[in-house]
Image 1: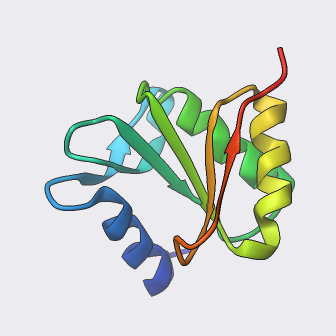
Image 2: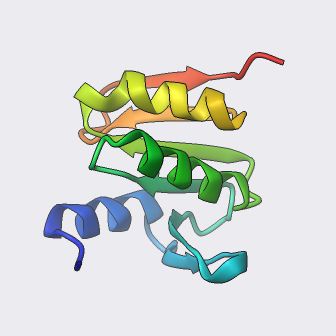
Length: 108
């Protein structure tokens, strides 16, 4: 299925000026966006389904960027936080409007 216009717009905004979208990862996977300096990796998952959120977090984990951001609709932020804790990834969960964020630090 093709991406929605809002998904494409969110990827471009997350990449910022000079950043890239659809960054290749090992295993034929692709990261939604990475900033120009390579410090921030962003995955956007609009479905809110636990299994898809976990896959998005796994892509963030293999991105190699020190800052990881999972961007989801606000109603899915608690579910996304649990997905990041489940996979064991530190980072931020942000809503689609960039207004709210939750910092996740998994328990060791």
